[in-house]
Image 1 (cartoon, helix red, strand yellow):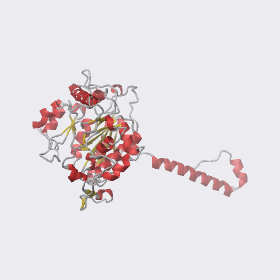
Image 2: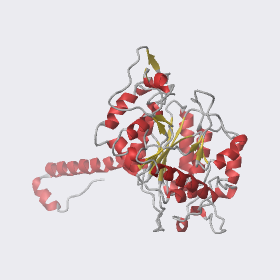
Image 3: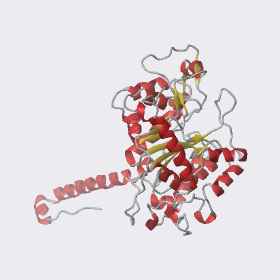
Image 4: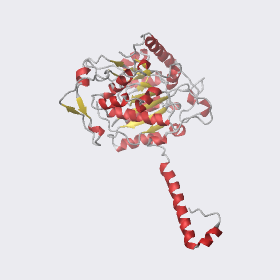
Length: 416
């Protein structure tokens, strides 16, 4: 396309060559501007640039709280990833999927196609896939790097209250309407992060060894390397350990990424050579920060049963664990095998799933309230902002009330 000057008489006096030169320069300038806009236009799926603020166009109502989820998966996890995503989906939240770089290209394409073809995902625009995934090495710091990456992306592009990291092996025990309703009265500065300074066997097995994770610099996945010489324990900060699964406030998440003093970066460098750093970085950071150490709730909100000592690996949950899971009042559980029968029972009795809901959990956003039946394959704008909490909300509220009450009675001794 060529833009013509408004007054050709002026250019006629300048001669044909000058006129052509000006037209060519104008065309080049326009092309540069136009092409650059095309190149920077975000794609529908694949990178975090496709984020947009979610708000129903025909509704002025908002939800009381909003969650930003990171759901991580590795090779072979796509079926579990799909099921978990549908179970925790809600139009008022945000979802970022990270499939390990080491997964086959066919699996990356499968999850991208799944997300792009889901009508409600396209309409609301709140589900994305990390376009340049990281290599994640078992027990290495690459999992922590992927978590911080996702946190930074979500902070830059979305407005939310709490950050939740899940794996494809996790599953909810309540609906998102239940979770939103239960958290509606929780102070938004609180962080749910299980922690302790009593490292026990981890003192010698985690605190002193030095490791190198090839996943930080190599595209070829391999095991971590162990350095023969060990190091002494730090003296400028106190080590804490705990669960890798957390619910972090937006304020603390901002501190992790943009820390206005050097503690977040100092600890990140230290934990680069630390075994299973996701089980210590956030705990050590928050408990050594004067500003945030009093914002902790010592709980990860997960139901987990561990192997026999040293309690390193969670046991796969089955139907035998169902009653204990429900009685725990916790909103999440892990880990589950693919399509285990207990998941069907959770879908049926706790999430109120049905075929007409499109495999989504019960929620007011698709007509699941006041006796109405509607399809969850697409968003009903008039239902946006409407919650339909059930007994799951009461269970989680009972747990949250107990945890917050215990925190308030600790006499300013939250990190110990």
